[in-house]
Length: 251
Length: 120
Image (cartoon, rainbow over all chains, first blue to last red; front, side, top):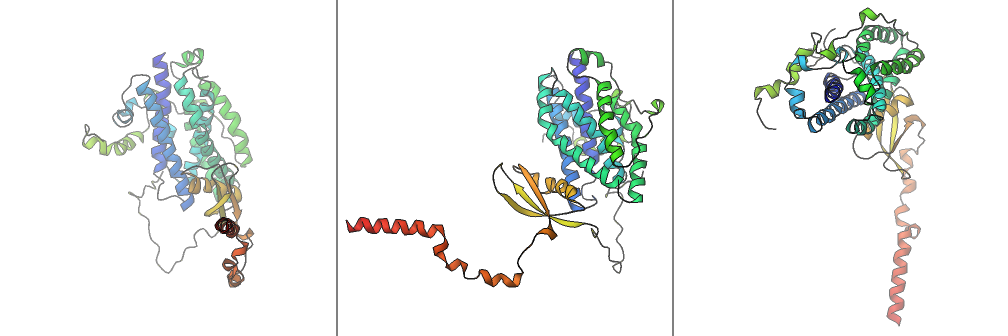
């Protein structure tokens, strides 16, 4: 059971760390002061979630400490989905990614409040409120820009189409899926994906955008098993640059 | 996709003759902050936004990300009706009218009490 738990925690933590790092790239160059602050603050929240999850891996499941897990692992060991690794692009893409990713996060944490694994259930109850705001932020922007000008609508639709098959990769199943479900740790990726689609479809439609057509053969899997896009390695190199200059330094 | 990383892509500054209208499509909203349920909401500042929903969204991180917050209010700046600054003279003598200040009576009470005591 411990391997199944570790797999679940690593993928959640790595998703949070990488999306947090990516979104923090907007700090200082956001579209306006208020939004710059909001987006940066949410990116910080994500790093906080990653830290809390690594802490459970360390304290309850015997893995290394959070800093080691975040900064001293190889690309292959990361279990994040490829959606979160993609460059920030233009603001429409970053907003669409937040919309697709954070809706899945909110439902995942909501499901985990019922988890038989207490440390995770407690964490889920704690961070649900933060993610609720992230979702509210994404929804408001998606509606605003979807119903905005001809340009904003076109940009949102094209980013949605581009991000869609990456986003479906969030729900890549692991070999531990059945174990997690039968042990009542997590109700599973299939259930999560179902609820996610039910949740986001009316919002996309309310924003007068079209829900992209899913082509199963185009879903971008691999991240959960350590296969990443060309963008993760440079991100890790940059994120770990300082740590690597003196790997044994104490902070 | 082209990078927006400022360390790679530097901001290209426009010639000074071109004046860019930033945020010209946005209006301002006054933000009020409530620390605890039942407590007064206090004016804390202003955000730029295109509608009340956006204003509240921005206010949350600008004014609610540190310390305790229970709720926030936003009000369109143009909806706030105020006196003209020329009318400030209407308030000039108010500080002198201490008999309108409840603290004045508290002090009066104590003085009278003291005076009565010394009589006995």
